[in-house]
Length: 179
Image (spheres, rainbow, N blue to C red):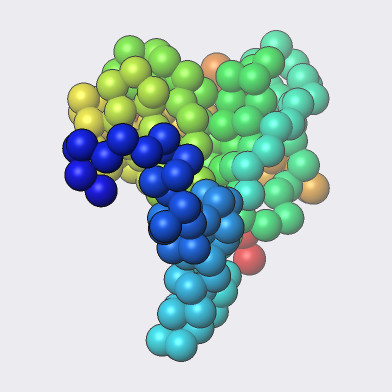
């Protein structure tokens, strides 16, 4: 097509309507994802390698003014409790509880399924599912709450919030390894 083509855009597209450039976006993405999973299987990886962590919302049950209890997550995933501003994450059979806000400037973090990480929408700081800092303006990992297991519940101690750079030992210990 030249810049001097006087045909209406609908006529110009007719000659190329069958090419991949005009396939509906969802169909194209579906094909792309299926090809990627096929390539992983061919290379010996299981399809679960490509699976993102499940993300959902949960409400904790207040036990006291400084404690909230949650069911033990049955699989790796991320649960967000907006009311208590807590992120509960199970990653490689370890459970963590994080403050919902970015440690840089307290903006609510979000989960990026396609990248498998948390990100601050304000300045794009990124964090691994275990809260470790990856990149961006922040200078440390996500703030972790103290956690303990009580039978089939995870108890998050809302009065114990640990910063990776100030409370390194407590921050590292703020986790529950599952069998």
